[in-house]
Length: 533
Image 1 (cartoon, rainbow, N blue to C red):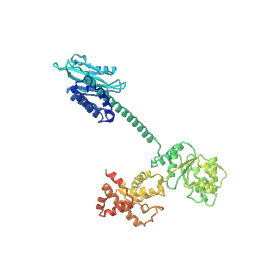
Image 2: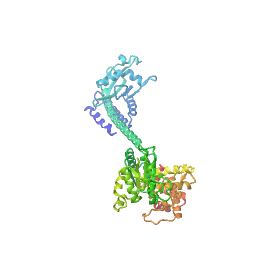
Image 3: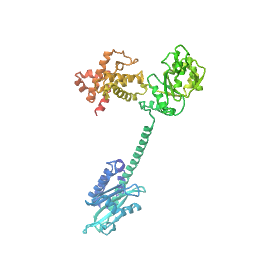
Image 4: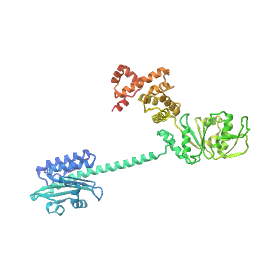
């Protein structure tokens, strides 16, 4: 109530030195002040303008003998946003009343001053309404103003005595209108701010949705967002790309994404692993050979660069190339031409090169195992793909993706991963990165007989501490038993909302053993309490 009750002392300041509101009788002072406090409390009770309008009129009806009352609030010169009337006949609507009294409301809004009609029966605007003949009905209307801005009107109709003055009622309505203006202005300001925040949020959400994300990649961590951004930036050019990262992080997927977003999409995408073949035949595989070029070359064969002409070639593990092959690859990058093994005729090719490596090329340059000039030709636009341990937030989306993929391939109906299995997945350090995660999930899916992947379906390596954890690895049997125990405890804690005593009784173990196991497995009880709520 702090905002609106600051108005109340100012209202009280209008009380005369004898304790009277201007124009009010002494017997009404306490009643009028009580009404102001009640209305202030009503206006503080809700953040919605419509929720405070009708209760305010109801309090006026009970305190001022009002037969009809109306509040209109508007944002522009057209129809008001809020029209609330109390005391209407059953067949009348607030809009009907507003249409009838609109000229009077417009006059109050235009002048910014109160309007008093001492006898409604003589006013042309109400000539179509049936009024009591034995009573004198007055109409009082004051503007709802905040500073110089008129937000609407507050009006009442009440029986009156020809000998009495209506100035006290007008002054009281002015105070109430001032309080209402402050409340409405504050709420409108809050609504505008909220609307601006919603528009900004919608704009950001639209940017996120429009942000580039390859269809073949999973993950929305900050590290992966940077990878997506780099793919988007380089894909439309012809620049050579060098993809860096540990083995198993998905460098080939990045190469596919770069090719798929390039102008060469739809043309050849040729993959070649520089570490997959012996040094003696790598040159033939890359550049092709002529018939009779060496023993066993019974026919001419085109190399990977010829096959990729007009498209993209992906050279994986480029750091494993022999020095002699590095020289010929450098010529392709510089001159866009090469020679088949056993031929002296130069062949030109239009190929975009994307290379990848998990090796430290800078250290290899210093030791002379990798040519510096080739390094600088390859490292035009580097993209670093983070290890899985560097993007923990992507673990569960990846795991869910692989469960769905492997289950579909195996014809299984698996819908989820259990809490205990999730704990093991999140705690593991994943030295084999995404490739290791996919292999573990595929194994779990094959072992799973129900509809969820459990901890015992995961490999024993996930249930043992990783090297450097300071504990001695346990054998497969013990690891499997520990995993099952961990899963059962987590399942009971989840069912009991983190209540260790109840979980211990359900598992038929002592509370001391339960506490020891929770500490040993580093189980976070808060997580289960939140899920229970």
